[in-house]
Length: 220
Image 1 (cartoon, rainbow, N blue to C red):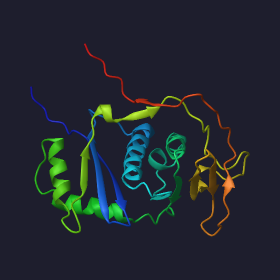
Image 2 (image 1 turned 90 degrees about the horizontal axis):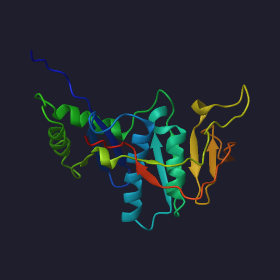
Image 3 (image 1 turned 30 degrees about the vertical axis):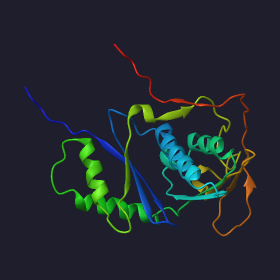
């Protein structure tokens, strides 16, 4: 008996507003999942490479939607806090819920219009993505495998909730987070207010924080 099932292929995109460059990270369900650790690993690797290629950068401004398991969680905050302690200030701002149309959506639209036939291999998606845009330059596409996904061996930030008691602001109310090189994390719950407040959570110091493999490889 033969049967056919769909293989899930995932794509995570970045768009540089300054240079108009698009970046696509592609993996299938046999190589990675949709956990917060997977998305944090992709984002830190992407921004680390960008900062290394542009050493003059001291402030990195990131805009994203409010998807909690991708962009608004303690896993990503710990990853950014660990990454920015080098020298870069990271400002992560969240778009207004219900009004999250951004350049990455245009990237997805261009890619979808290029898919005209059945696709049988995940790698074929990469060719389609590279050909989806020609001007100003094709999308930078990277296919990910299980060894590309990492996670932190410890966490310093226990929570990103801006309030402590019932009735206080929650994670859903966050409008922006700022990560300073000394490990301080600031937050805002209003787009109109320019005042940053310290995140009221417990910070746990660890002697050595390192990136380790997210997925364990079992050889039988």
